[in-house]
Every structure is written in C-alpha cells, then in structure tokens.
Image (cartoon, rainbow, N blue to C red):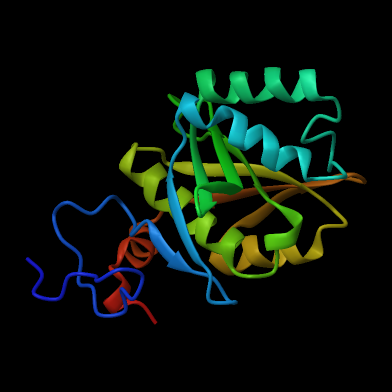
Amino acid sequence: MAANMCSGWDNSECEGSRHCPPRCPRFVDDEGTPVLIRPYGPDRRDAVLAMYDAIESSTMGLPPEHRDDRERWINRLASDGWNLIATVDDEVIGHVAVVPADAADPEFVIFVRPDFRNRGIGSELLEHVVAHADDRDHNELNLNVSTDRTRAIAVYEKIGFSVTNVNRIDIEMRLQLEESLVTAVRRPPAARD
C-alpha cells in the first residue's frame, strides 16, 4: 500500500500500511520530543502510578489523592475499560481511559503529566481516543470537565465535542463519532495538515 514508510521518528512522508493501528503511534510534540502512544498493559501499571504521583492536584476528585485509592482506580479503569498511554523514553507521561469498554457511548478521562502539558500531547491522545473508539465500534464519547479548565474545554471543542449540560462544577460534553471526523484522525502522517 505505501511506498513511503516511516523512518524512525521522521514519519512526515509515511503513507501508512495495513499494519498500522487506528492512528500512527509515533508523535513528535511541540518541543520536538518523540512520544509513543500505545495500549496500556498491566506491566505498565507502576509507570502509570508514577505519572499520577507527579500530578499534585486533582480535578473533580481525579486522580484520587491517596496512593492506595489511585491504585484501586487504575485497576478499575483497566478491568472495566480500555486504556492508552503516552511514553517518552519508556516513561509514562500521559494516560487516557475509556469506560465501560462495551458501551456504545463510553466516558473517558485523560491526563498528561504537568511538565509535558501544553505541548500537543493531550490533543494527540484525544485523536487516538477517537480512532480507537471507532475501531471498537463506539458511537460517541462522553466526558465531564471542570468549568475552570478552559484550555481543555477549547481542545475538546476544537475536535468537535459539544456541551450537553453545564452546572456549577463541571461541564458534560459529547462527541458523535461521525465518519468525517474518524476519517480525519485516522489519516497517515503524510496525509495530515
């Protein structure tokens, strides 16, 4: 299928292949750091916990404040849903969980380690969520975001999320997995804008 396969991290000419996952797992962030996005496995549990240890504050109670609670939360996300992680040099710097795995319209949470925020990693993880959700036959994605997370809200709206409910603490948002959106996020790197 593709004459131009990616070479290392410079995948700007990659046209994909039948072996590619729903979205190319290689990404270079806004500071030029190579990031790999891949499915979470139980062997990465301690690395995910370490990432959450670096997050000093929670939003709407997530991630849980105490380590034991975080461990139970991660175990529940892994058993009830599907998860992706973003890594730099094998260190987990981002995590997204979609639950329940068998729902047509699951909810998800997404976190990026503070020292890696504002570098495009959250947006890239979000596009992976869309591609993988379509691959798993979900119809839509739902999330709750704190009303004070204006930057995150703007990122969600940019990809196509719409507000379904607003209250004092949080905003509920929904994304219909329409064909045009899914096609756009699944394009190989050489075909992206």
